[in-house]
Length: 317
Picture 1 (cartoon, rainbow, N blue to C red):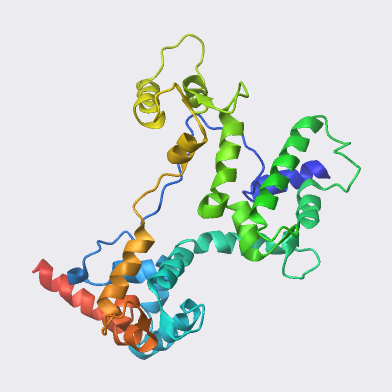
Picture 2: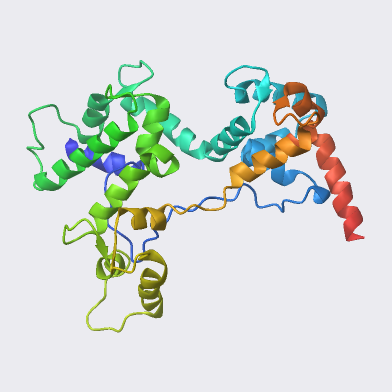
């Protein structure tokens, strides 16, 4: 029974460990908000996809201008979290991050009922443990040969669950459970991401990552074959860019710098752009009316699509 549940959890892409591929990229990259150029002279498709997400932007493109403005008004009400009648840059940024991570929330929603067994809208650690590992207190994986590995996975999952559980009651809200399943997307989970990375790579158990451990996580040589060029390049990367204090090993801070780099903050830049272009009275916040007055930058419609098509055709002539 336990083996079946563990296989199921792996298929769902959850938190149990998998063997590393030939070359593993542990770096969490910030994603582009749109594949379209960010040039308002060519249209607002970039802004639409950044603000709505790609799939929702396509839906709005089929609406009339009246329908688009009406739906935008409802979105504004959701963005204004404190309901003070204004949308700040921070609220805009949070909304854009949420829409860009919608696939994560949809994945959580899809699997929610597998863990929320009592249907109370929250997932207790006991619910997750029993659903994933399929045993109750005291049974201790008695039907498995490799009990030690599964105990380690259980302990690792419990530690991550506790880190995601901000109020410490061992019952996860939907947001906390999302942080548990996708810790790299949440700032307050960065420490646990670093800890788990060290555990995966640090073979001698000294709490650091040496260059051979760093390479060993990406590449397993076969026999006496020479190292591929990309492996030699990674060794140099370790020396030049990963090992910042040049002591021959990576500490926690250096590992965090490597796997969770401070990339160009696309949601922050887009939030500033939308605010600047819509803030008529320059008070550094937007009213609902200011957003609706500039609705065609935030969302598309049949009319804006038609206009952009005409512009593109004119440019091609």
